[in-house]
Length: 232
Image (cartoon, rainbow, N blue to C red):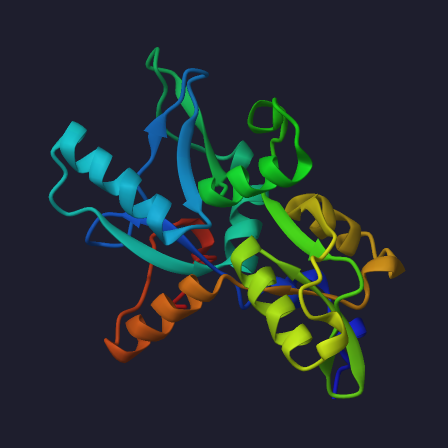
């Protein structure tokens, strides 16, 4: 069997669910940006997606819009592949480039700002925040994995589990570092050995929603060129 350090970045992010707004047929809704791009948003938070969907329904009177789930590895491939494709018309009637952009979890952006204590964090940080606790590892078989959390709440929960099982650590506060998810993915793509034993932990709220949809036998078949988005 393949060991964890041997897994590539795509395998390490394939279990992370993200969310897109589509019509009833599964085609993503695209909006025109000020630069004339056709932009589709990919959300890390189902709650952010719900708020954006509500705004779209109120502003554009959309009756068939809904939220669908895809895997992050598929979404990442789409977002980094189709920037140069063209679809529809731009603001001035010309052909417009299609661009999928990630929408970071807004609650986690606020948590990251609080941790970094940078007043202009929200304006200067252009990625998706992830959280790593210094010294925290999780056993996976015979391997020690350094967990990368997409939410601070899940990191806090994992830390509590550690000190509950180790009284000497009770009431200690973890030293939390904030990183950009996409910078870590880039390092993994370039096979930086420093990240071989790093693993991503999906947001527990997102995992719960995915399991609920599986029970309801819900799926996703977005009509995007080449079929990169498939049922989750």
